[in-house]
Length: 489
Image 1 (cartoon, helix red, strand yellow):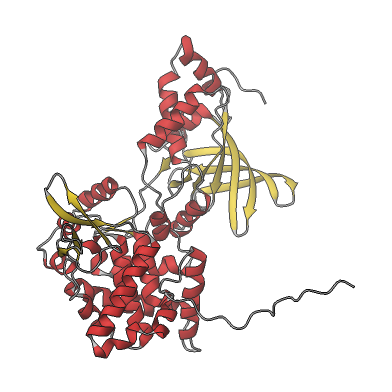
Image 2 (cartoon, one colour):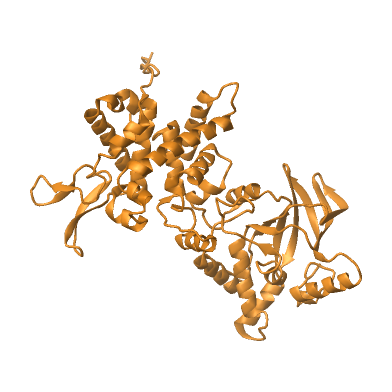
């Protein structure tokens, strides 16, 4: 069916403006009818257990009605709030980029916008019109006022961008703005309504679907509950004192805004992805996590080895999580820098300035030292005590071999790179880069040092422990015999 020049003039079709919706609801109330939030003709299909409805929404309606001031809602993901789904925070630069694309294109295609809502039968009626193909049915969906909230699942930046452009051009009568207005009035966007209200499922679907802007590993770490490593990391982030108000998975400004709203405090220290990796390392993965798949495989093996007939794998995962939280809490109380934060004598900003383990690489060194102790069968608490004796301070410097430069006492070339600070007029040990080769070398040096200084922990420095941790490759069995040349007859 062709579009009219002004879709807002269409009635009993897809387009309904905010004003006309209010009037219709008032009329419905006066007539004793149930007010309708929205009504659409849609294609109903399924994705496994998930029911979904798909239709095309004219762009003006999308901008005026399907926005976050009217029919839709969104929420920055909050690991501590399981009552509603969440997304990544909104990026203004991304909105401007999309809006510019809409404004300057004669083909303003936005892809499919996905929303999610619980299909409460008291408020959602679906009337079958005609079967079209296997698993596809043409239906009329009516959603009444009082229905559950419709959440944005994928497309929040595109929706906001379109609303801004439409606001700029909807009353245009000449020039480029009129051209844009006509293009938008003739255009529609595919919308898919997922009949699902579970916040965890909707958040996980966002992670699986979002493609217009890459999702940060840290946001995936806290939102995606589909992998064992993520669930373990989420448990540690929620329960370890070190992580309270200090783990980032959104932009720092978003975290602080949410903290102010909740009456709490936020100081970003470690990204969630780093905490997830540290938790997996302590659990028994060590540094054998060069890819997420490898980390997942090794962690599953750890859980499998501890699972008996009386316990489930998920119960074992929680047990491991509790063990990790306990040792991290002990470390937070005893390792220099962390200890001062715990006692309230140091801010995170001051900690970053003074200590090398303020970087994720330092967290990995501590985590893998604890992991080595667990693998070697010695006390992780004694290993933490030994870690507390190591000079983590940036100003723990010594004169270099040439008597002209300064180097860090312990971590030079691994966690630290000492240079002359022209502004401060002093030698300063900065981070040498969070590369795997650097922090694995630091782990090796720490384990060797502790093994030499603490006889009770001497097994930390053995090849067996290094192999279990992943610092030394496991010895392979004999390979195939070499091929021998066949003499030419």
